[in-house]
Image (cartoon, rainbow, N blue to C red; front, side, top):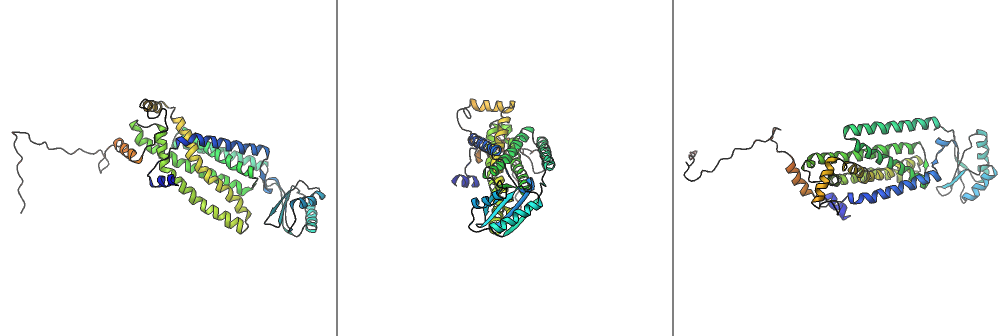
Length: 368
């Protein structure tokens, strides 16, 4: 908390490059866990993806094993059974025949209890729609990458795309590990995550471009040091944005889904909540690290790094954190002086002090 307080007040700075290695290791492990779970357990796809029949039976005191025994008598033992709201059993099967679904409903009502909700849908999200969604996603990645490459540079486009892919894989991995149901609302939330992650990353990139444009001309700081200065200046903005964005999402999750029982809000809110924090994390620790590593390989920044290493500033120690006062002094030295009209400032003529034997200036008359 003291670090966050100092960062918020501008009294202290965080060595973000010193945390990049750990962040990359954590992200790699989390992505591998998500991909492994996706390959082994798969995703809990909703009815809109697979099609089938859903029953909600109010049966107080009935366990999942007892409900499954009744389903095995109906030859639907592979149906998914879940207890929700304490005494309501949610049963989902892949039965799509209307007569067969009506038969199962009558038996469940007789054996377990009254049917409170019954839904039968076909696979509305079929292979054709999925293929179109994948193509649209690829086009989105290409267009955004080209825009960032033209507006900023291609190295920043690479970092942004890696960060967005990391956020999507990590969010889908959470749904796979916890076996949360994926519905069309969840897919919409995933697309929203992509936009949020890109916004946060562009804010970081725009700040580092501004600082490099001012302080980079001095050749006193490496690109990693300038990136660290940029991250310290936008970190609290990213944190505040994430917190203020998460507050209504948490309210929607608690009030909408847990109190009012709106399941769609829960599906949408959980994905958004995961994506908000993962997006801020990837912007500060992943996208910035990739760009810094790529930029340090350029000839200009490699020479600056070697110069700093010869002075013992970089080699063998942590990244030098540029303080607020030092950055202000360097900024003043690097920035050209300008007049109020926008042009270069004119130097005021200086009056030389007369030396010995010179003629003293004529005294001015006093005004009455």
